[in-house]
Image (cartoon, rainbow, N blue to C red; front, side, top):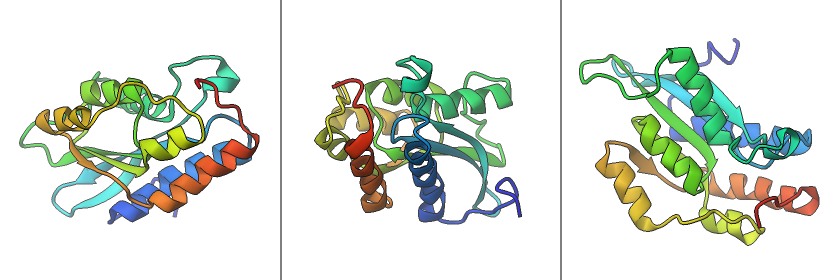
Amino acid sequence: KTLKETIYRTNEEMMAVAVEISRLNVEHKSGGPFGCAIFERDLSTNTCRIFSVGANRVMPLHNSSLHGEMTALQFAERKLQHFSLKTEKDSPKEYVMCTSCEPCAQCLGGTLWAGPAEMICGASKDDAEAIGFNEGPVFPGSYVSLEENGIKVTKGVLQKEAAAILNQYAETGTIYNS
């Protein structure tokens, strides 16, 4: 089976994809320790397939906006030919964003505007800040706002595995916004 054909049933299975993207990005020195995968969920079966992926590309492309979440959202919206991942109420599908770390301020804004049905996070903001990243003005109310706008938020899925990638990056990578 190809990744496109693989069926994902749990948050942990989907988060494992985002964590693997971040691990590969660190291993290949192709960007920062942040990965994101967007899944299309079939509401009739509650199964998901990969729709879009993104990896942090800030350092190699010298562009502060190329975070893992933002690149995954850009690819997903391009694929949909629409500026939003929101679906109609009677749609048979919805989009789920899995990010290897709780989003920074920029990515929270991008998530709000893109409107996936759900955002699932791995490592915490504290994990990213512990190695020196500045995540910007992110508050508990930021997540309340996402929920109020119809985006379900789940935190801490494979948190230890995702945080381990951050710590691995801290040994050799550049903390570019400290």
